[in-house]
Image (cartoon, rainbow, N blue to C red):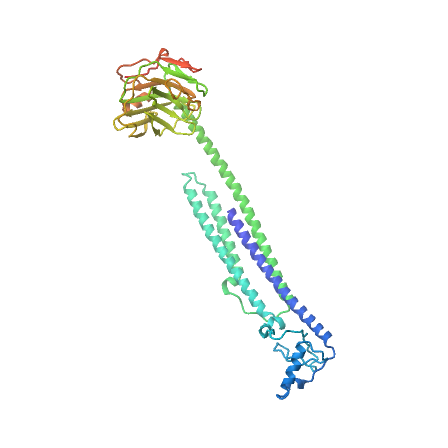
Length: 498
């Protein structure tokens, strides 16, 4: 609506400016013509106050034609004779310049080189009645045509504004449909009424301009310049007053609409705040109840804080890794890395500060569609098989993504070191603080096969599943280094390696 008001105001101001310029041009042209005629008359009278040429000179017989032509050329070239020849010009109201015509002033003659006398210029001046006639109707017709073109441009602008209003009305309807049952019918109705009133005012403005309907009328009878000027001045002032009233009304409506919009925005913000509060309450109420047992804590981001698992890892053709995580910073860092002498990136689960979660197998990488938020406990599982390099990613017991061609045909080599909280560039070393885990982790599990979706869901509900060859997750199996701590819990957590 603000955009519409600006467009209408600019169009109205341009229209007023055009009318005022036209009035000033008409008045200036009339005054300039009268002044020029008075000046020319005074100059002619001052140059030849007492000269007289007999009329017979204008009708010299053919026998004396050469003498007459010579006399005329002598006058044009500044002859020294005191007499001026007869010089007839086809001007409106002027039949000749002779000594027997005291009512008409003589022209001022200036020397012109031979061959440079442009008769077309005199003919053009003779055809222009606005220079010598007392009535400037030719000029007024041109001015009226310019006024008509200006009005037509204003009409096009008004039509463009109307189309813009219709488009905005359609957009308002779309916004109304997108409020999901919480529409503000009262505000929309008021806005539609304001738009309808604006359209009515535009139509009234069109009706007030007769040039839009019937074109330029025929010139009226001659009027004194001051009368026409007074009428035009009164019309411009009246139009300016009307436009000012409309602008004031539009400004009031804009302020009222802005106030209503502000109230609606406050109501929407309050609703959003309540919704966020409810979501936060639901998240706090549904946070998983992680079983007791000790938890590994990595309070800061360093390149020396980690935990090593004292467990032999056999040769694996498939695996499933599950754990509980509660990151305290952006990204999860490297919760788990398994390195062998020939390959430090044999198995790695990591996420950088601004990168997605990745799973590396034999230094081959795939991005996992996991969205792990900080500050809350979340259950994560990833599985892999050498058959086709298939992989799966679970979060909260639900499958989030799967794929294939990840290190197909490869087998996990035995005899390496399993490290929690850091990414290894060498076996047991080469840590990078930007890839470190900051937060807590618990109940880490490793299986030698791909678990089913039901088994993963059972683990996410803190239930035990049947295992073969179980190693107990105890404090004696985990060694912490560099400031990492073991926080005791209510019961033992187990790591399974089959």
